[in-house]
Image 1 (cartoon, one colour):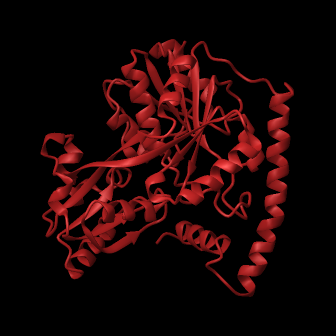
Image 2 (cartoon, rainbow, N blue to C red; image 1 turned 30 degrees about the vertical axis):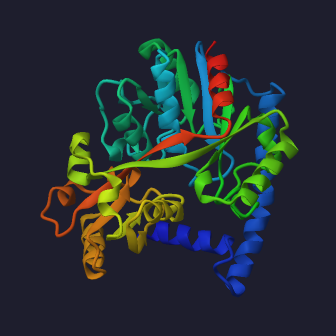
Length: 380
């Protein structure tokens, strides 16, 4: 494991109480001080925008922000995909603005896709932006840290009627018509500490800016945990619409077919029922992914986890494959977000076991009707 990822893993385990001892205690005390400084800085910066001391930019189109108040693992990418598809199918020209996290491309405006053709590799675009471009024909995807700049490009060059700020809740520079906050119903608000002591990007009181709060993966959470989330939301924001959603598994596709975009060769979920499989992933919430596999029928003999956004090497994939063979698995299963980062050399090599990509679709449940009305009202 790379040194940076090893440190991130150690830090994550420390702030979540998985590391004990004097070193961990000292580190937590230091992180707590930095959290106080961070929280003060966030509040001051937000205040400067709200008081008009820092100018906010307005685009000549509708702006919808989709983000979260914690780091990692809320299901933001598949939700952005679902939301963009809904608005596209309403007949609007929608463009996704992604910041390009861990993208190899550097610059102000990066065109990942114009809706017809993908112009960047996953290394250039970053896994999230590339996956959105791959799965959303007809929806351009742009990357760039300053969404006011990429937004102007979307309006002027791509004739955008609607832009979606992917991971935009903290991008205060750009005015928006609708703010949607995703909350992981399995992990709620992390450990309730601000970064870097915890995983909160902002204090919970900042939920007061949200027009809608979307609880994700509710089928894997308890009613009690969802009640706790709802109480926390209404404590700070009585007006926010609360919506529930699930990640609905749709199909398995062998990675070579998925890579080529051959969806017609998909495999029914029941085909792997009661069969032994190995899962591997590098996502924010691997537990949820592994639970999804178990829920649809396969017997999970091993769950191999890498740090979020990890880029796989050929050697790592060969090691994962060998572990699966040794465990007696009949197949490996991974996510679409991981599939884009697996070396083509491995995908097209001779493999003892198939590698299946689990395709999922976000489905809105409780609050769906009001959520659709809110979106249509925003469009109007």
